[in-house]
Image 1 (cartoon, chains in turn cyan, blue):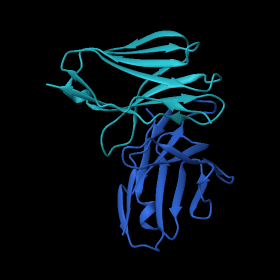
Image 2: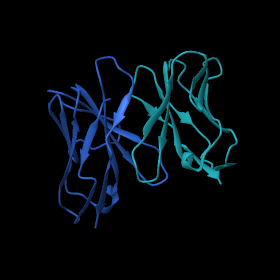
Image 3: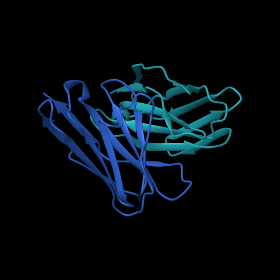
Length: 109
Length: 116
C-alpha cells in the first residue's frame, strides 16, 4: 500500500522564522510531488510542485526532493501568521494522487 | 487559471435521505474528476475516479451503490450519497485535472455534509 507520511504537528514557529515541513513516501516509482495548503474548513490549494531531485524555489517557498531517500520537504521563509494552516504532502506515481495526513503549522506573532 | 465549482457548500439532511453534490469545471474540459472525502483531522481519502462517459472507478472499501457518481459531460460530475447515515457526515471535495496527462489537481471548495 502506497503511503505518504508526515508529522502531524502542530509545528509552532515565531513570525519571521523558517518553517520546515517534511514528508516521506513509500512508492519508489513516484514521479510527481506536491505541497498543498489547507485552511480549516477549506479545500486544499496548491503551493508547489516538484518533479526532479534538488531544490525548487517560488517566493518564500522552497521545495526539496530527494528520491533516493524518498523524502520531500517544504521550507517557508519569513513565516507569517497567515501561513498558519495544515500542509499536505501529495505524491503521484502511476496511480492517483496519495495524500499525507498533513502537518499543522502555527506561526506565532 | 483552472476553476472548479462545487455545490452545495453545506448540506444538512435527515438520515435515510439522498444528497447530490455537483462538481463543475468552469473554464476547461475535465475528462477525469476525482472525489475525495475528509474526516476531521484526517487526510483526503480518494473515493473514486470519475471518467466522462464511463463508469467511475471506486477505491477499495468505497460502496459504489451508496456513492453514485455520474460524469455525463466534460464539465460536470455529480456524487450522490444515497440513504445517508450519520457516519457519512464528512467533507466531500471534488477535483479535476486540466488536460490529458496533467498532474496538477484543481480542487473545488468542498461540500460539508451533516446527516442528522
